[in-house]
Image (cartoon, rainbow, N blue to C red; front, side):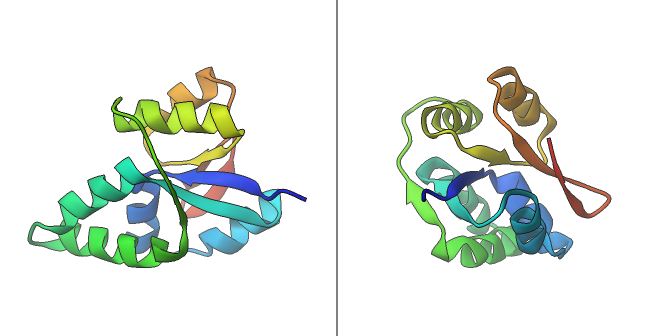
Length: 124
């Protein structure tokens, strides 16, 4: 049996670090066991933010630490959001994001989205 893949955007990872929730358990409750995946370009985005100073950089570093066990998949040279949607379509993955633009793009491509509402996971 193949696990449902969930592609994580940097916005979702940073949101759950900033406002800790039971996000992992909530996703398991909603979709069953899943394979957390981060695209290489999302990892690079977080690494770039992590190099700075201040709260946002600290949150990015903690996000990278939290996602250190995730599968890391390659991506092409398009915008990060486009790469996430393309990868989701290709492997039938769900997209975890709190970015409204990425949410709309994923839904236009007929991909299910995991987001946060009032600090809880919402499946769409």
